[in-house]
Image (cartoon, rainbow, N blue to C red):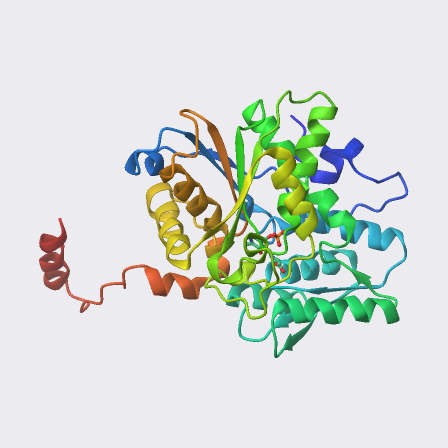
Length: 354
Ligand code: F0G
């Protein structure tokens, strides 16, 4: 068996690469697609639910799929530095892949509004980390202006190679299931990933690898739901900081994905997100970050409205690893028990809980 070679080599013919492209990879992709039964049983849901755990990528998020291609093409084009605005995961991934390529990464993040694990990733990989006193949308406006004046490659998802790379997740889902799911659910922030999956599914169908297409389901946090509201949100707010975005760059293509597939983009509240986040971890043993749980929260919401046909195959992408955001755990999980270091006390405690 040949070992996994990273998404560019595994799906070579689907990407704009040649022999001249230096492939910068951390062997991203090939993430688990896990059938979950505990959650659906507890909630009495008669659908076949799968979680695509993209938190298992090298830097802990789906961004690595896009970053391997964006950084490879940047190096091919002679770039010595890359820049991005980020709610945390893009900056972590860009920093890691730039380190691997031996080029500079500059990342702009909203001060105080990114999960600790993501901040320290950018720092340890040696990126130039700029915290701006503002939100993601403002940071993205700034980097868009910067790249017009300086010879630096933008690696946000407005860089088309990001979307190209991220479509590999749709290919994997089809390869792992053996067919396309009926529905595919994702959290929506800057709206690149839902656009990438839809592109991936369509290309796989054109190539004859699948015969049907899923309906695309996107979920925005209630306080950061510009696409659902139909207008930008000036001051987006949500506990799911990864998707705290008020004016998504890929707005149009996300709406296209929704409409062409006959799917839906809807809202989930922070409360629904945290409930799903805790259930995925405690019922299934999968630790994702809060934003990722928006996909599952959304499927639960739509299920309860009678949206799904019985026995539909539904895939939810868990976009990022829960380890990135330990602070949210302290808000939702039970506190550890503190006992004196003596056997009798621990035994007395055991009697109570067993
Ligand atoms: N889930 C996670 C964990 C994310 O980090 C993001 C986006 C999304 C979902 C939404 O994906 O933007 O393609 O709609 N994070 C970006 C970042 C914005 O900077 O890391 P999207």
